[in-house]
Image (cartoon, rainbow, N blue to C red; front, side, top):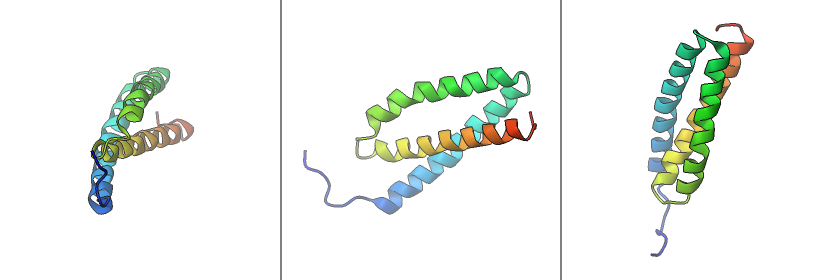
Length: 93
C-alpha cells in the first residue's frame, strides 16, 4: 500500500475541529455534572477516561483517516482538562 500523493489538510483539520468541539463539550458537560456531586469523583473519572483513551489514540494515530479523529479527540481531552482546572481553581464546582 503506497502512501497517498497528498494529505487532505483542510478536510482533516475540519474533521479534527468538529470532533474536538463535540467530544470536548460532552466530556466537559459530564465532568461538571459529576463534579456537582463530588469534586474528586469528577476528577477521577476524567483521569480514568484520559487513561483509557491514550492506548486507543496511540494505536490509531498512524492510520490515514483515523488520525484526524485522534487529533480531534486529543484536543477534546485538552479542552476538558483545561475546563476542569478552570472550574476547580475558580470554585465553580
